[in-house]
Image (cartoon, rainbow, N blue to C red; front, top):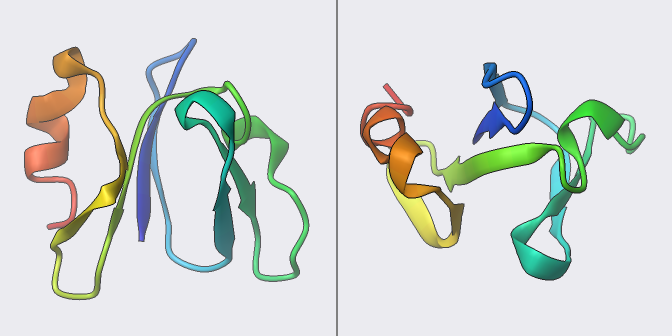
Amino acid sequence: MLVYILKHSGCTGRLTSGRIERREAGSLHVYDSRDELIEYISGERLRSWCVFDGAGAAHREWCHVQPEDAAFFQNAAS
């Protein structure tokens, strides 16, 4: 599951299907289950993001969390 916070609005979201690709400077390209790019959560539009496994554990190498967002991500998978 991808949990994220949008850069400009601060809105939060979760994506439970699809795929992600890591891009330059900590950004992602996010694709839906039909393999179409989801532009509003791709590129430089995310402020913070983290991928969690089915048990709710964060994949540390697949996280880019700003310090001001750390508390949100501590409970994000539950």
